[in-house]
Length: 152
Image 1 (tube, helix red, strand yellow):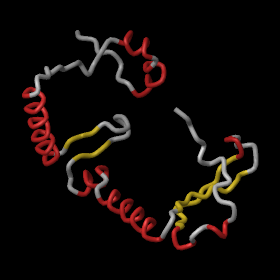
Image 2 (image 1 turned 90 degrees about the vertical axis):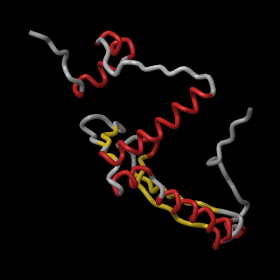
Image 3 (image 1 turned 180 degrees about the vertical axis):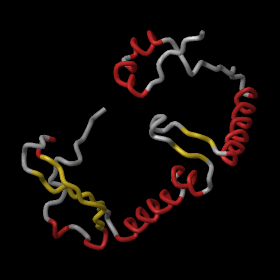
Image 4 (image 1 turned 135 degrees about the vertical axis):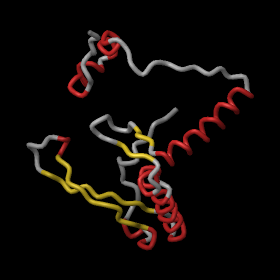
């Protein structure tokens, strides 16, 4: 299997060969040369180019539709869930309406998997600190983890 660097260029013999109606500037950002902040900042340009205007329009429409269906936005707009960064990136706190949706999806998922001969398995959410040490997570996340509880 070959790997091709699409950024190596040149991509066209002449910029005159580019259909200007099939090109879209998506964003710009600063970037340091080779990621070194001591080096001069360069201008990074993000864009997309297509063979024709119809392909560009289809791509832009696809991107807009993806934004409309983004689960992060929908979850907030429909009051289904929230994400608290203090608890951990991507950890979902289900609101009542979202909990109902999740329950329906889980029931469907379980039914289909059991019908197809799969077994269900549940694992603990909490583990001994030694497991987190072995995986390397303890050192990295320790300041955001709760300390061990002691029972009096």
